[in-house]
Image (cartoon, rainbow, N blue to C red; front, side, top):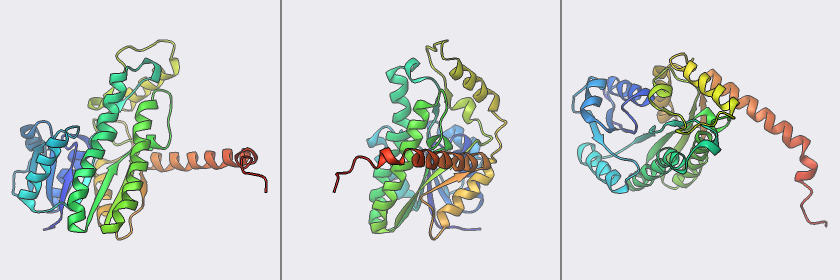
Length: 278
């Protein structure tokens, strides 16, 4: 099977990113994949043909991103779909996290993604076409003790993605926030960070930390099916602004929206009380 579209996948060395790269190559797409270790990625992917371009690209470095984009254009001539997948979860109560721990999470999950979008958008604008699949999380719509920072980054991704979609429609560019639930990958193993200086008083946070560790490799979501969903979103004629992948994510979003509507109705009089009297 041959597909001419060129995909860029960030954070491709493991988890959903790696699974997506493998799925795309198996279907004949051309794929540029970013990683910190090219040789390790080549081994993990198990493919060395001309359709595969593994590159080192630090998403927090604008110059490095421009170099990476230039390599992709030199090799494939265009970029059609970008999967902004690089990211990790920082667990911890906001009080016990250092400024560095917080900023590092935002640098990768939000500002790094912004850097990639800005660089690729210039390519899309010239092409008059392109699509972004920005990996958020159900945690961008719901949260829990110990998720303050991670949820904040993923909520930012949702709104960033939506605004990019509105801006990009001027030249046939679409942007979708993809909000998965738990996928059975190594995300909670290799991509989860816990506070360097935890405070024992936050018992609810410690309980959730144990729950995260217990969920590792027990998630209900199939990463191969998630990768297939990404391809369907990339090909959809009229894609959604956001999509919740997985029964846990979909159900969580439904419950959250119901809670929001109920609270809005309860507090409607106060909400509407600030207008000038006519």
